[in-house]
Length: 453
Ligand code: GUN
Ligand code: ZN
Image (cartoon, rainbow, N blue to C red; front, side, top):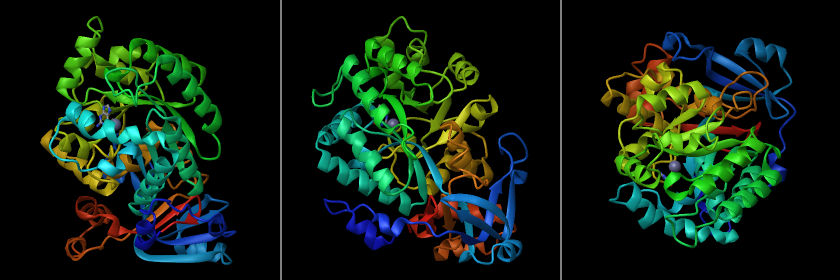
C-alpha cells in the first residue's frame, strides 16, 4: 500500500483493493533478517526468547507460512519460488492490535477531556453517524488502510451499536484479506438515543451478526458490551447468555480505566463487590474475555482475572492521552494474567503499534519495571494473538500461520539510523525503531500472502 493509495482512500467512497491483484503467487520466498519467538519472554530470560537469523527466509504458499530458516538453505530448496529480498530489513509477524474503536478514526487526537466528558463530547456524536452504511464503509476502509500502513495486520475493534457498522468492518476486512475481530457495541443506558439499543436488541442484533460473520473466512465475532456504565444489568445478562451459546467468540469490554468511572460503577451497582464482579455475575469472564485498560484493579480482581484465564489489554497511548493511569504490565504478567497490547484508537493517540510499544516502555518505567524489547514485541504480536485465542493463525512466524508478515526498516530516519548503527545485537537494533519509529519504518506488509504495501 503506497502513501498515494492511503490518500486515495480518504475519499468518500473508499476503494476496496481489487480481488484480481489479490491472488497469491504459488510460492514466494521473503528474505531479510528474522526474529522469531521460541518462548514467552515473560517466562524466562527475555533476550533468549527468540531466534534471530541475520539472513533468513520465509516460504509462503496458499496464504500461509510453509517454512522458515536460513536464507541459503531455502534458496536452494525452494529455487523456483518468487523471491522478494528485503536486504537488512527485519521480517516480523504483522502487529496484532487487541483493542481499538475504528469508528473513532475521525476524532482521534481530540483535545482536552477525561474519559466521561471525552465520550460524551467527542465519541458519542461521532459514533451516532454510523447508522449510515456509506459513512461506515468509508471509515472502515480508511481505518484498515491506515493500520496496514503502520504494519498492523490484525485488529480487535469495537464497532458502534449500529449493525451497519459491523457489516462495514467485516466487508472491509475481507476485501483486504485480514483477520479481524469485531462486534456490535451494546449500550442501553447513559448514552444518546441515537446510540441506545436495549437488552433484546443487543442480543438479537449481535446474534444475527455473529451468525453472518463469525468464522466466515478470517472474520471473528466479539460480543461487545461497551462497559457497565452504558450496559444495564439486563443487557449484561443478555450478552452473557449469548456468549454462553457461542463460547468460541471473543468478548470485549472495558474495565477500571479511570477512577471516576469506577466510582460511577459503584453508584450504579452498589451491591457489586467490585467492577469486575459486574461482568463476572453474568458470565462475562474467562478465556476469550478481553478487558481493555484494567488499570486500577483490586487484589481480588487481579486474582480473579488470573484464575479465570481472562486477558487484560494494555492501551498505553490512550492511558496517557485521556489521563487514565499507569498500567502494571510486568506485575500482571507475573501473576499469570494474559496481557495484550493495543492502540485504543481513537482514545489512543496513534494507529501505530510501534508508537504503542514505545509508550508501553515509558509507562512501565513510571511503574519501576524495565520492559525488554522482547517483552514489547511479544505483546504486540504473539501476546495479543494469544489473548484473542488466535495464536495458531496470527502473531507468529510458525509454519501453518497465516502469511501476515511485515518488513521493518531499522534505519528509517537519520535519527534512528545513527542510533541503530551502534547496536550490538538485534534487540538494540530494534529498540530505537520501537521508541522513535512510525509508518516510515514499515517497508512492506503481507496479508494472507498478498503484498499490501
Ligand atoms: N470506555 C467506554 N467506552 C470507551 C471508549 O470508547 N474508549 C475508551 N478509551 N474507554 C471507553
Ligand atoms: Zn476502548
